[in-house]
Image (tube, rainbow, N blue to C red; front, side, top):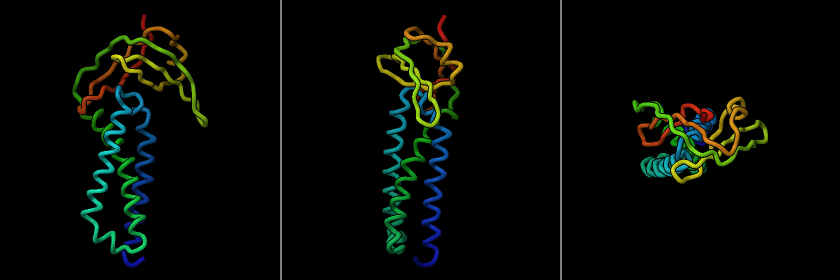
Length: 170
């Protein structure tokens, strides 16, 4: 690989790793967003489209990278696929000035999962759609299914509601 192109490849790989670390830290927030799965997929697809457009703009530079041009393109696409959901979730949550509203919703079931770390999950019916939320063990243990859960949410700037607090309904 000639000149600075190996540094572009290293930068692209570092972008993937940084995006994955950011996703790991933002993952629970995405999971605890009403419609979070839809937010993830819409923004991930937008990330791939942005990466493909960037590839077209940078086509000469990537082609000049010879045999590593494909690796650079792939790293850009994967990195944007991971980064855009993190950015969308963070933007949705951070730039909101909506009030926090609390409403009761039916709890369908609760379960635990995970292979390395135990994940405590609630499955709830939110406006006719089943949503899965993850929470801490203490809150999970205080809630019994079936029943009602009070969710305190804040509508984000992108229109997705972020759960701020789980409460067992009285």
